[in-house]
Image (cartoon, rainbow, N blue to C red; front, side, top):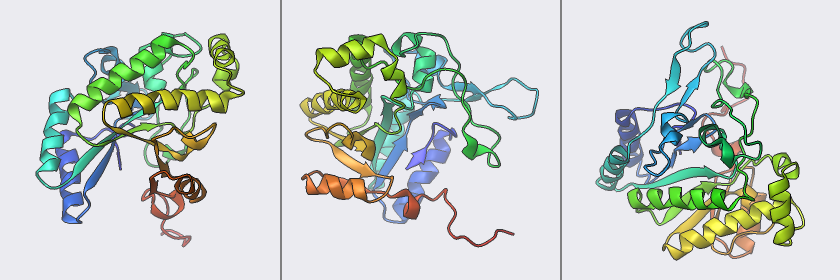
Length: 279
């Protein structure tokens, strides 16, 4: 998995990454295209996602006191090119478009899609690498207002564009680290929860994920989500990507679902590889 949201890579850098995968006989490229820190997927239907959401003010970058914006995005033509480049090397590209959390850039671009309905900036990451893990945030929300019909419609229309570019059988929708406190204080989400007989915010998230699962299934694709999609009830055809540990993957497998085991403790390459003091 390559995270192009927090730290943008050029197309040449992405292709070099694909080359390294192919050299190591790895045949799936999980391309993380959206997050709170930048929206990298060009949407023709919602152009503000990249016109606004692909750029952020980076404290300390490139120099304290400067106001240049950091970021970038991939055009649909560029993504088609990467898919073809990878296919020629035996690599399948699986895109990830985060929903309903990690949506700071989306809500910043379209404030009406958030529970607060107010203007906010794209989130930022501090000077890399020294302070990167602090992940401070601007005031605002990174969670979609899933009680709105227009929010669900927007997500499905974005997925339609994703499907036109990426032929992969699997489509990753994120589903992790959703700050459900925003839904608890949202009149629209609470009314939606009551309307559908949902007992809590976990079931509200499950309702939303099931909507995407059903939609992708009808399109002949399969949905992948991080292990938080188990909360509130797992969608019928979902594949679970277990990152918080092994329990989520084991639980999903026992329920008859396909699982991708990716526990962070063992295989996240941005984690320390030992407890030895670093020189």
